[in-house]
Amino acid sequence: QGKKTAGDSGKIDFVSDSDALASLQAEISDDGEWGVEAVSDRIVAFAKAVSGGDKSKLDELKRAIDKGFEEARNFLGGTLPDISYKTYDRIMEKLDQWAAEE
Image 1: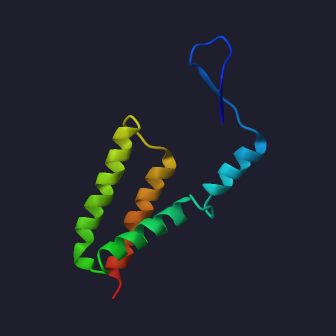
Image 2: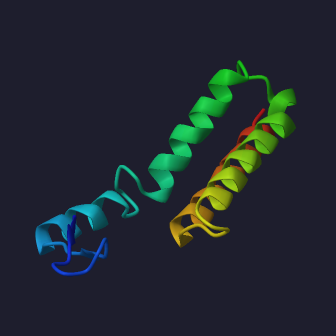
Image 3: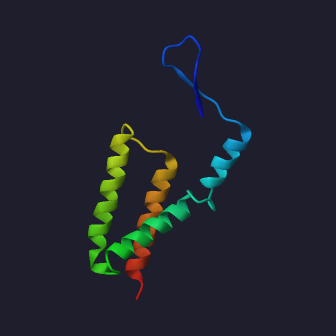
């Protein structure tokens, strides 16, 4: 949550209480809804679904994911939070595992 500092034009100080911080940390933890595993699972499931399960489209799927991460990086000034890079790596690992499945 943010609040404007009195007397400063437009300056925002961010404050959080310990409950809000704990909740956010839980959501991005390894087992959290927005953690690396959960997000990578959702992205890979979506990629498989839009490809119709066609592994021959793997390169196209990877390019689309690369483009999405690149656009996010550009939007955020050229870098992403560490969790985003970990998620990207995990997505690519899962896609490679899917490609290797018989």
